[in-house]
Image (cartoon, rainbow over all chains, first blue to last red; front, side, top):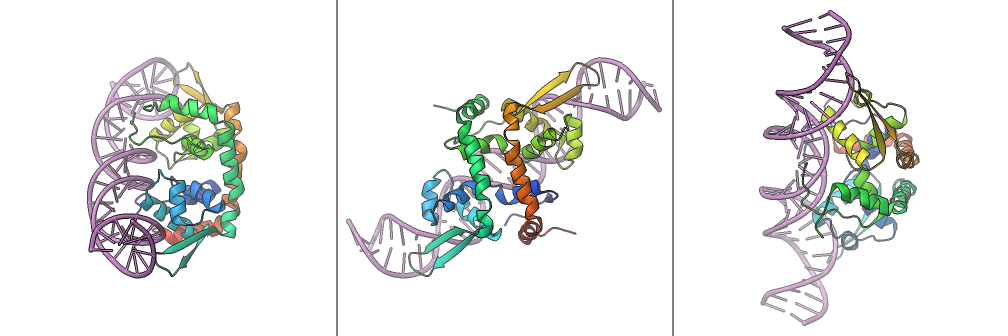
Length: 121
Length: 121
DNA sequence: AAAATAGGGGAAAAATTTGTCCCTATGCAA
DNA sequence: TTGCATAGGGACAAATTTTTCCCCTATTTT
């Protein structure tokens, strides 16, 4: 695993939540798991822009942080299911609020973002 | 400026809000500006772990995204003040909720995070 | 004269995060 | 028998973000 060189800062609540939610796909993983998409391959399909590898890694981190739990069925081919823990559940209202804000301001945001980052058509 | 190689995805609200809030210090910048710390040097002092350069850059991005506005006083030495725009204000309840969640679960989070990232004493 | 102040910005280095590629195993389908 | 699905993991490469270092402005203070 990568060994951090700059020490973490965990001073305030915002630092702490940042530590567990930072990661390009984590919020979406929590969201889709909450929606009932439990298996890694389903999540993959829901988030096709993420590489398989990084989803695996971020799922592991969410698990280590006790936001999701994992059940491994001893079958071949392998089957795994994730669900939110009670702790993870407590984040759902916040994630909803984030998504809602984004949806609510969708056009404006899209325009503002594209103004800085022109992309090919 | 750095030119992105992987295209953005701006499909859902979560993508959009991610685009404007991602950045190691942005949420804290918004938070402190909301608390009345308006000048770059104050913000610097509030967030000593961030480099001066990156705060400048992220303030510029927040400004481009119309979450904060900037007033430059034509004096020497220079004086600049930021404030939240109305648009930026609408994020404050969400940022509060994030901070509150972090504070509420402070001990648990600290323990979980340190379990993965042991740091020097 | 030399610092100190307050803010900005370029260039390059360092840190960190993501992505690619390849390998594991087993049962089923073509 | 080759290929696919399913999940995980190591090694390394690429992308991205953040930091470091240095310079510039124009007064005021030492």
